[in-house]
Image (cartoon, rainbow, N blue to C red; front, top):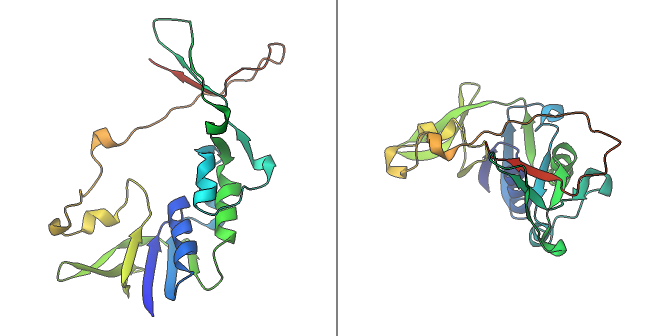
Length: 199
């Protein structure tokens, strides 16, 4: 039986575990955070078509809502610019924690998920990835799937022949800063859920 190790339990990693588990593979998932610390309290925008394509049911309706149109505010103007999308093309805004937990619940029990398990690097021999290093020990695998994000420590270990950058370049990462204010209950409800302020 071939062994697959998945590092990181984000949406991509956990869906990969579920799909690959349908075949005769020995699958282990290593996630550095504890289960109750996964992701953070925010929303992800997901296209409606993704659910059908990935064969994922919608979670309980209390955990998502349909996004409204985007509104852009330029620094030199107080007149908003709106992009109106067709209703059937609007994304769903999913709460991250319930969504990831729903995806985890879909993974068959035969998949071993290790929480609080920080992978230290790749086990490489003769310029080939042979597995991972966890707790100072080499764990062999036929395939390692890196789902640990843009700042993955695993990519730093890859031999030059793989032609993969050791780390993401500055221009390949972006950071979002959010501010939250108490809503004015007297005013009418915003027509948009998405606002972008261009500074």
